[in-house]
Image: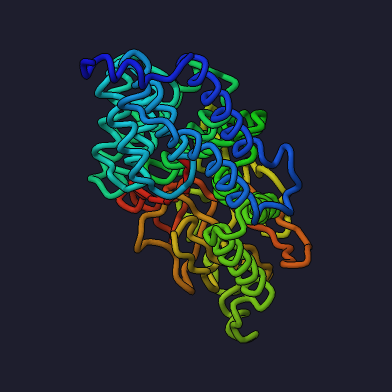
Length: 451
């Protein structure tokens, strides 16, 4: 009997049905993982990976009982190897067997888009960014699908995290566009919405701390939460928590970090973020409460020593333009007279009595005292590294926006007011306008994203 005849006799019976059955079981395995918290209490979070691995092991055994070279015909081999590789690839750790199967699959059928995407994710887990990117681009050549687009969006940001500001800005813009395209292909896919939110969040740090960008980020996250698969991912809560922190919605930020910890108990990053945020809030409250620990006599001298000449261009009788409003006259106001929210037509003058340092330097936070010795915090965004205010500086803030932060829980209690300044060039420091050279050109943050 010829070799070809021997190979034919080795073929499985009903191969299409066998592969369809394996495909269905694999789909059920991924749904078990992705919808875990829809079907199980969050208290089982620590057992999730173990339970997924147990089911994976059973299915892998079924795949491994089949010899793809001898028992699967050429016409079905690429599909079989893709499914087998996808089964190996379900875990968060790199599995070389996944790369091996998926590489064979795309060689046998270069048009198999799903295999290209899965291969890209396998390379990514091994931190082989070049090959991962090449794989996703290989899929794009055949079909501009949402998985490839959103993966390339993430990779672009990772590649350009430390790049030249101009290159990084261009890469971030393209990253946002790719994520938008992914969302447009399926507006119900929460994972794509989550990636778009992360792209906006990265734009907020690396390009400009524009509140409008942060709002776009939050809208994307809101859409992501409508998808049960996306809302079971700890990274969504973590990244939303980061965005909330810079929107200064601290209580909600802490809630999101804490829930992220519950979904992934071994992931330390959100736990560290909670610790840092609590430390920051506690420091701000303490600095305001103690008035910078400055002695009463000196504090009184600082309060009384404020010269109205430091109002500079914001002094009486000088017209200003704020947005679409023209010929605006500013009226001097004390800190106590300010209302929560916007204070149009008002200007405050105060002296810096201390600052709070953070790892990211965003925002630059300091505490001021006015002539009545009232204190508030000031948070300034887009202020370049190495810039800022020091104790004794006289700060003039036109049309201040006042926020009142108040919260009490088992982990932290805070109650303080803050003036938020999005553009440092609106400030006067010691009577002089903050220069354009002090406007921040780039900030960087790292966000966790699942593959």
